[in-house]
Amino acid sequence: MNNFSFANPVKIIFGKDTIKNISNEIPQNSPVLIIYGGGSIKKNGVYDQVISALNGYKVFEFDGIEPNPHYETCMKAVAFIKEQKIGYLLAVGGGSVIDATKFIAAAACIEDSDPWNILLKHLPVNTAMPFGTILTLPATGSEMNSGAVITRTETKDKLAFDSTAVYPKFSVLDPETTFTLPVRQIGNGVVDTFVHVAEQYLTYPTGALLQNMFAESVLRTLIIEGPKALKNPDDYDVRANLMWASTWGLNGWLKCGIVQDWSTHMIGHEITALYGLDHAQTLAIVLPGVLTLLKAQKEEMILRMGEEVFGIYNNMPKEERINLSIQAVEDFFNQMGVKTRLSDYGLGKETVEAVSERIKARGWKLGEKANIGYEEVKEILTLRL
Ligand code: NZQ
Ligand code: ZN
Image (cartoon, rainbow, N blue to C red; front, side, top):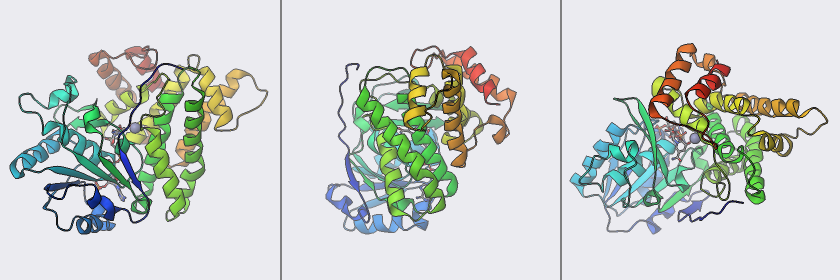
C-alpha cells in the first residue's frame, strides 16, 4: 500500500425529513444565499422545506445554475454576494449546483486576481466562504469532497479544481428528495458513481486490500440497487443505498494508498464541453475504450473486478475473461439506460479528431501511468464509434 494522509471534515446528515436540521448548522446571524438550478426543487417540495427550515434567517436566492455549471453564471452570483454582504451559502441540488457553489465560495474571496485562473492556472484557493449542501441527485460525490468542475461557455473549456477550502461544512442527504429524478438522471447517477470507483480501482495493484474490497462493495451496491431504482422509483431503501454509495464513491476514502486513473473523466469533460452530452453519458462511452486499450496494464484489476463484482469465475483463457469483464461493465451501463457508443449520440469520426486535438493542445498525458496522450485518445474513441 502506498503512503497517504487522509482527512474529510464534511458532516453528513442522512435520512428522511432531515432538511429541517440545517438551522443547527448555519449561524443565525449570517445572511444566507440559497443557490439552486432550473427549478426541480420547486416541483418536488425541497424548496419549501428549505424555506421553512430557514425561518428567522435573512434569506436570499440565486437560481438558474445550469447542468455543467457555467463560469459566467457563477460570476453573477459572486457579484450578488458582494453586493448583499452574504455570509453563508446553501447549495440545493445535484452536482452542478454544488460544484457551482464551491467555485462561487472561492471566487467571492478573491480580490486581486481573475477567478478563472483557479481553473485555468490552478491558482491556489486558500480561503472560501462557508457553505452547506442539500443533495438531490446522487452521482458526483461533490457533497463530501473538495473538487468542482466548471464550464466556460465562451471557450468551451470544462475544467476542474480542488481545494480543502471548499469542503462543504455539512451535507444533507435525504433519499426522499431523489424520488422525483427522471429515469435519465437515475441512470446517469449510477454510471457516474461506477466510473468514479473504476478510476480509482481499475489501475494496477498496490496491495491495498481494504480499499479494493470497499470499491467492490460500492460497485456491487450499484449493480444490485441501480436496476431496482429504475423499476421501483419510490423504494426508500434502494434510494438510500444508492445515495450513500455515490457519496462513498468519491469522498477521498477509496483513493487512500492506491494509484488513480481519471483519464475517462478528462476525455469525457472534453466531449461534454464540445457537444453537450451529459457527464455520465460521456463516461459510459469512454470507459470501455480505456479498459480495452489498456487491458494489459490493468489486467490484474480487471480480472479481479470480473470475479468479485460480476462473478466471472471460470476456466476460460485470461484474455477471454478480461473481455467478458469489460463487456459486463458496458452491459451494465446499457441496462441503466445510458448508451455507450458515440454513434448513439449522433457523433462520428469528427469527434474523435476534435477531442484528441484538445488533449494534445492541453499537453496532457493521462492515466495512472501518464501514457494516454493524443494518439491513445484517438484509439480509445475510435473503438467507441
Ligand atoms: O437544475 P434542476 O432543475 O435542479 O434539475 C437538475 C438538472 O437538470 C435535475 N435534478 C437534480 N435533482 C433532481 C432533478 N430533477 C428532479 N428531481 C431531483 N431530485 O437533474 C439535472 C442534472 O443535474 P446535475 O446537477 O447537472 O447532475 P449531476 O449531479 O450529475 O452533476 C453533474 C456535474 O457534476 C460534475 C460533472 O462534470 C457535471 O458538471 N462532476 C463533479 C464532480 C465533483 N465535484 O467531484 C465529480 C464528477 O466526476 C463530475 O465531473
Ligand atoms: Zn464523474
